[in-house]
Length: 198
Image (cartoon, rainbow, N blue to C red):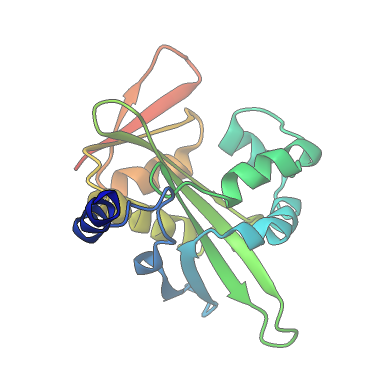
């Protein structure tokens, strides 16, 4: 009798939801930069860690300071523990997009830019940030990556996007305003916050 009950129970139950969200294939697409360079914009994958190390090696001290508000050393930025957290992303909490380019001569894959959408726990908010390799700045890539992240935020039912940036980083101010963000001063005199209600 107990066996029959177990069989009936097994027949009426469904498989549990997976512990981790599957890779979000829907966010993969191609794009062409102003100079004709073709890139694939896609969510990050665990196997991207070695390529991310090379990406961080292409960043100038100024670019690093503008993104992290401090002079973060290459060794700290490329530490395995740090990159593992980024590359082994929990897509339910964070979507990290990379702009990837395949060298037509060597076939080597290069990451040219990284954008992050980090969902906060309360109020449907998420933080957004982008980082572009120095060689590929001023070619529309940062703007496009931010535009994609805004669309991802809408798809993910985020209600408000926020971004922190240095007050003297006027180029990124212009990009955020172009995408509809409003800027406001914060308590830190060196920082500005960009906000977009979705």
